[in-house]
Figure 1 (cartoon, rainbow, N blue to C red):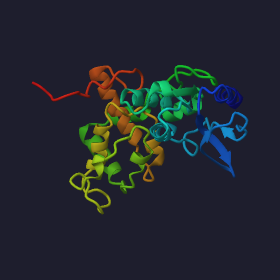
Figure 2 (tube, rainbow, N blue to C red):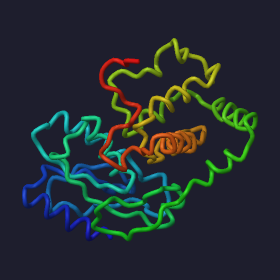
Figure 3 (cartoon, rainbow, N blue to C red):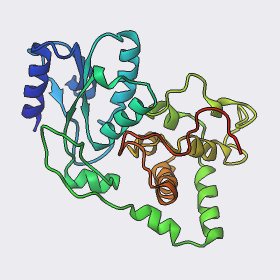
Length: 265
């Protein structure tokens, strides 16, 4: 699988189609993001652990935004899975990246990873390695939906009470690109109070991410308190899909909840 990716990246670099390729490499026993600029220097390139989520997943699209802002005239390649491609599409719609300046090199996730992530589409539209596997409907959302209203309320209050306000969920999110963050406002989340006196932090962020969350699951992986944030966002996404037939990243359409200009009755 890795050889197909290396071959594609080498072609892109040597042909001059991209200035650099944002992917993963292994050095001194650790895997991390890396910008490859030489087609002959791909020996340490890796794809991470494709059988389980965690340790080797990074928000490459978030790094790509920073590269694009600094080198706006250059074209870059980036490694994408299904969730990463959804992120790219959403970032194009939100004008955070120029699709003419990005070349995606896709890989399809194996069933093990698709199942662990409960991913509806564990593959990008086009990929150079891997095989297309069926999506997985969320079991965790179904479990919580089976509770009555008081049960659901109690469940989420208990989960939110674990929050230590580290902002890890926000910082790792590839779709968090605001220059100023509303959830840092003292009016919403009082500084220095752990845990938050009310679950306004995660509820505010969940609403804020409507139309942007692409279900990558990095927030849950980054949370030191193991709050099932992905389950929360999946539920919000299900509601938006049911009401408006829209899921971010599956099309190049903006969220129906986004409005341009003032609201007029």
